[in-house]
Image (tube, rainbow, N blue to C red; front, side):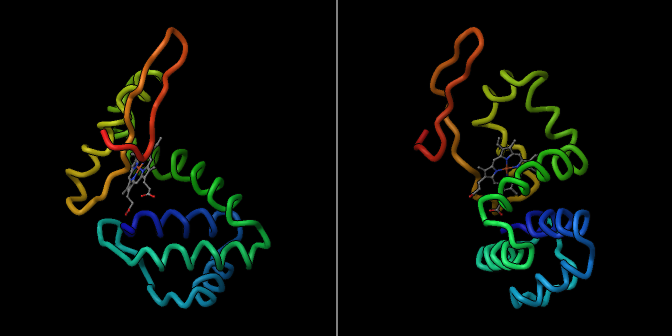
Length: 137
Ligand code: HEM
């Protein structure tokens, strides 16, 4: 997983629970990385261990941690650090969703080893968009 993902978990935990809690979570997950580098790859297991340790330390089920992470990722990481990239996805929600299948190609230019998610536009209507995820284009 790219460092930006672990960094975002760190930012979310420290914003809500402080640095000491983050250190505790890292210790529990047996992660001894001082600073995550956004564009560097880390083993997926490290991210999973951090999420599980956060779930235990914060007494919050993993699905709720992941949901909070999704919100944090879009509102803080994407809007804050990658705002231009996010804006280039479209000027309203339906445009953004229609462009979603190609969105991570732009991310790939910055991160050449990215294994992007696979979204597929299935159909659109006046006020709806149907998208497939994880299906072969
Ligand atoms: C500027 C905004 C965004 C950036 C910089 C970004 C970046 C990334 C990166 C780096 C990964 C790969 C993580 C890894 O395996 O190392 C990823 C995966 C993914 N992204 Fe994004 N992303 C953005 C927005 C979005 C949006 C808007 C969506 C969906 C609505 C999305 C959905 C996903 C999904 C589903 C994955 C795959 C996760 C997996 O492999 O399990 N991303 N993204």
